[in-house]
Length: 144
Image (spheres, rainbow, N blue to C red):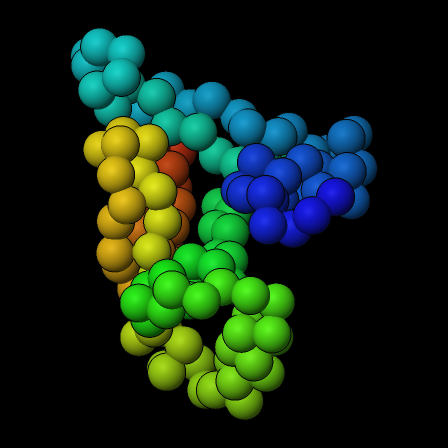
């Protein structure tokens, strides 16, 4: 399989296969707000929910797939050969976290049906916001 066609769903399937299905629930649907209609924030979808073996310390994994092609496109590079991707890979190995988080990243938005430009930091912050909303939802539901 070529990694050029890989995406977040492929990453989710790989992670799901690595984790025991006894304690792992892939793509768990959460009711975030029962007052809202479907498609308007009623549901949240955790990529992987891991049940605690002991106690009540469950884990939610929010996966973000960052491709070298998206990083190259974010740099406005038109030549996307294997050599250019390998060069970028070597550059990234030497960069510090702060520099990587500031890197531009291009991806296809299914929702907007167009290419969008963001940064790696924004992608990670959006993932953290998702996790925080899931955590707040659990807390709110457990207090009812």
